[in-house]
Length: 113
Image 1 (cartoon, rainbow, N blue to C red):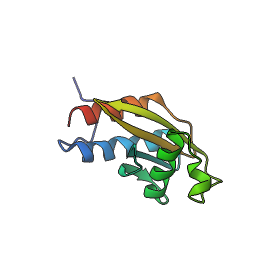
Image 2: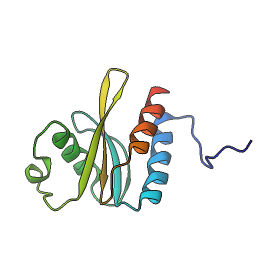
Image 3: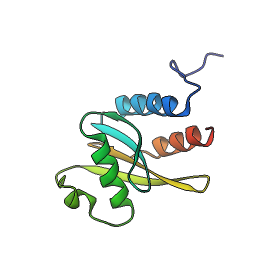
Image 4: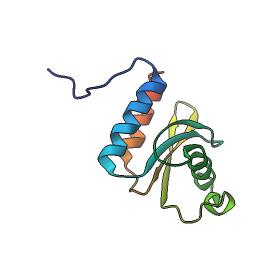
């Protein structure tokens, strides 16, 4: 049986980067990021300031107005919190719909770390 994935990595962060790049391509979004609940970028794919996007999404995930506070009001940003063991991470999509597939994949990769 052939593995459905063409690119693989034993490194969780590299695997996360490969996964996000592939999901970005499929979604047609501008960017995908994964951050800590504090807004620290763990991994991302796409165009633009991924660190700023990660910070804005983390703020939005706890009910703060991250887009206005960080001066990125016009962004079409969707996000979701994902629990990995006892830690919450934020998965955000810029310019495209959020997909539960992305959150599930992120959780699977980080749990394997």
